[in-house]
Length: 324
Image (cartoon, rainbow, N blue to C red):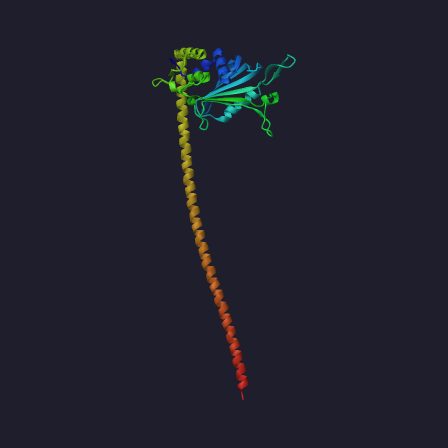
């Protein structure tokens, strides 16, 4: 089935603007029932700064956990096609930590308070040290002394920490092993068309209801001239990005080459200095040996002179004794 390639920001955004698809996709990723989800237009943006373009969604969601507990959370979803600046991700997260929303307190009244945060990162590039396609980084409460895992939740902790999900579309398993992988296969580059990178020839499981909804919407996207035009714009931005990155890499390589040459010159100078110091040290050693030889000779001469004086004294004494 031919569909629009959702790795493109414009297509990804178009897909998740369908609130029902967004709700079901979030439920599948989190493994919990997302009962409702809200995303406001101003909370959806493509951030462009220098080299990096990041598509960002902030969802307010009501989640029903397996134990029946209902909670309201903020789900931050960010998508990046290129290797990213981690500080920009941290800044977005910091913005959300400052946000407050209406939450019912124990008395049933509305209070303004921050929401617990869950972050989801769709990455179009691989992380070298993580080979799994989907990874959850979650929290646990553990007694450090006894190593016992504590079955508790504390608002103070929940509001200061968060769970995260990493989705590396280039490392998704080729054969889906569960519902999550069946759904995420829609984002896999293995189905990318060889003739038109704007589209995928999806050959995955089409029996899942959510997959069907996503395929239907992505099928409409590929038929949209406006979306295809925006994909062309994205391609041009990617070409500019790659060209600028190549220039930067070349500049960095040139600077590193200059630094290496300077370091080589410095090393050569240091070697020459070391050789000169070694020659000086050898000369000083020779001088010291000569001075030692001269001192030894002086000592011998003095001893010889003293012996001669003593011999002359003895001769003079003998002369006195034999004088008539």
